[in-house]
Amino acid sequence: MRDMDSRQPDLTRQRILDSAFAEIHRQGFQAASVANILADTGLTKGALYHHFPDKKALGLAVVDERIGFKVAENMIKPIRNAERPVQTLLDMLGDHCREAEERIKLGCPLNNLMQEMSPVDEEFRAHLNLVVAAWQKAFEDALRRAQKAGDVRHTVDCRAAALFIVSSWEGCIGVAKNMRSVYGFCACLSQLQTYVVGLLTSTGPT
Image (tube, rainbow, N blue to C red; front, top):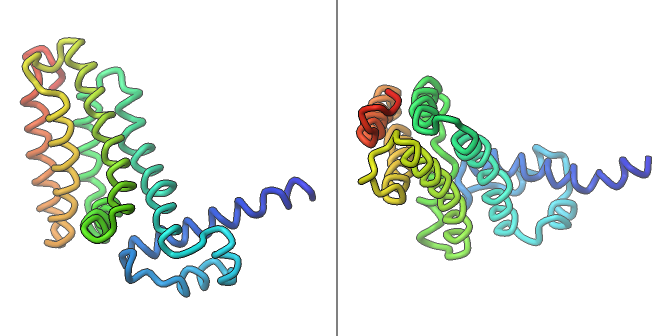
């Protein structure tokens, strides 16, 4: 019983974060309703504010612990662990196209918050930028490994290429969300795949 009691505050915090992430993804941060989060979790306002002193603290925790975690698991880890990172990157782009309807319905939570909050709140901008920077660095490191292996042309600026790939990927989702277009999303990702293939040497993966 003592072990369960000691875990309960952490479990409550995770429930709040899960619900807040979903609410912010649907509504955006500024329109997100604390009342909806409380109704979803069945918690009191006092319980929520025990873990997060205000709505902004909750939003920043969502960026760090939910959005950052998803980027790490879905974008960074696969390419960091890949034996052939460029092929893995091309496969990831194809996989995202196959999940187009789900991805464009609400858009990317990272991109949504960058558009909404970075212009109006410096602290949000800084936290969001850390997520983007980690994603870009992972892709840069992957391209450098592929370059060292002879798969990527030695003239490629891996840092700039990684920034372009991450920016384009997020842009594809944002534009396709606005267009409500699966075709637009997949066409954009296809062009990004073409760009990645263009980084390769003649002996690189195709």
